[in-house]
Amino acid sequence: MSADLRTSVLVVGGGPVGLATAMELDHHGVSSVVVEPREHVSYLRPRAKTTSARTMELFRRWGLADTVRQRAPLHIDWSKDIVFCMSVTGREVTRLTGTLGLALAGTDVAAEPGQQVAQPIVEQAMRDALGRPESHATLLLGRRAVAFDERGSTVVVTLEDADGATSTVEADYVVGADGPRSAVRTAMGAVYEGSSLPRSNISITFECAELGDLIPHGDAVQYWVVDPSCPGLVGRLDLNGTWWAISTYRADEEDDEDEVDATARVHRMLGRELPIKVIATDPWWARTLIADRFRRGRLFIAGDAAHQNPPWGGHGYNTGIGDAVNLGWKLAAVVNGWAPESLLDSYEAERRPVAQRFVAAAAENGKSGPAVLAAAAGLTGDGATEEAAAVIQAAKRTEFHSDGLVFGIGYTGYADVQTTNGSDYMPVAAPGNRLPHTWLPNGQSLFDRLGPELTIIGPAWHAAAFIRHAERHGIPLAVLDDPSLGLDAFFSGRLVLVRPDQHIAWIGRPVPDAEAERIVDEAIRGEWRQQP
Image 1: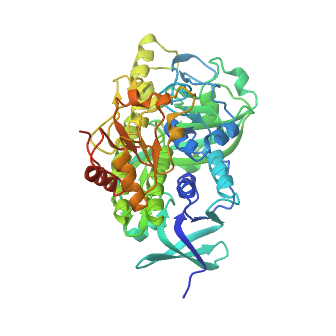
Image 2: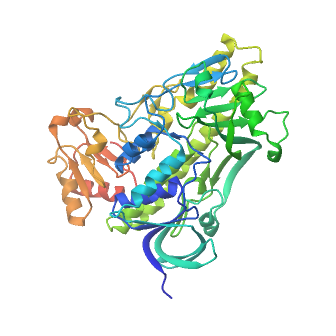
Image 3: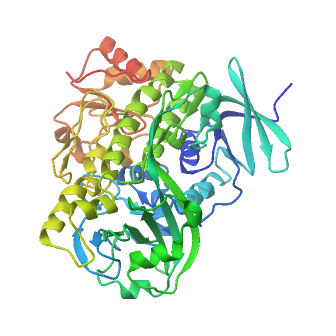
């Protein structure tokens, strides 16, 4: 019996990670079908609000970064501060500046700075991009995947709409980006490992037109309320009076979400009983969970289906985007025929340790949440001291100045360098690491000059062995050989082989043909040749 639809890759889940997977596949000319129960993006629960500088670099590859910035209500120059205060309209304790990668514009560290933007805006931007006539993606909205039948070289997936009507899609591969209750993870037989913290938090979306004019601290990305009677966070969603808040439970409070008075909680955090309208509430628990496997056969999982991070530091959604790019280019390389299927084994090998690293960082950040900060700093409702400010600065500096964590994702033993205060970052050009970024003399980003697949940087005559091997075997290899760019000095005269995800596959001096063949073949199998 034939399926109703045929595609190379079926993506189950149309949140940001599922859409990003389709975007990456589309970037490489590979067809996909995205299945998502929600017909429309909901703006009631904004969820992730920090798009990291690294994620923005990945968006730039797809031509999406400018669209996201244009649609973001908070301009990149609007604020880069995190304010710690007794209440949003009350006394300031201290602040951190230049946070969350927002101050990186124009620096050599990154091709893009971070961006404060609510998750629904990013989702809609990707939906719009995938809906263009030239896109290789098909969005099937209002449907969910309910059964998976692996048939040798393909998987037949049964879909169900809201009325119970079913249809089938046949795909070479299936990617589960369907969140914590992932049907794909269940079909794989994978299970979460880790824990959930016992007390919940409440996210609240509310409107208050006059609040902005009453804040004495000036503009800030987040206001951390550290009064022990009402700990939490508040921030803007736009400049028209829409706000988000996270109210954290105190140790003496009952964990009964049915009895939460969202308006009262917001009033306490604001420090005034201003007229507000609660739009939505979203109870959640801080979970540190990672699936015991990310692949079984032709089934894969990514994003929240594979790992759950607490939101502290803003790494969960961004880690999921990294999953999507890593898996997406590899699936595309196999489907397009220039890489062996063994390349797909490297997805879990590379991304699961990254997930562990980010989950651990988020959990560590969560140990100094608003309520914990208040206790550690000895704060009371009477005010704040210099000693309290010093405690907060020490506790939160690494969380909000985390360039080394965001950019220092290395898939081998070479790690990028980050100083102990978390703010200074030195990229290392080594196999497995993200290619160090620089702005070129002509004003372009180095990343803009890379090809969509493999790229070798260096004089063509030095790279001749690599070029011959790629041409003989149909391996797409762009050559970046432009003496005017000064890259020979930037990489100390070495050749650099770069993967589609901007990570270095190999770096070294010119080599004979046989060695070049081994290096390229290892790269397209997801293996690493260590730096000589």
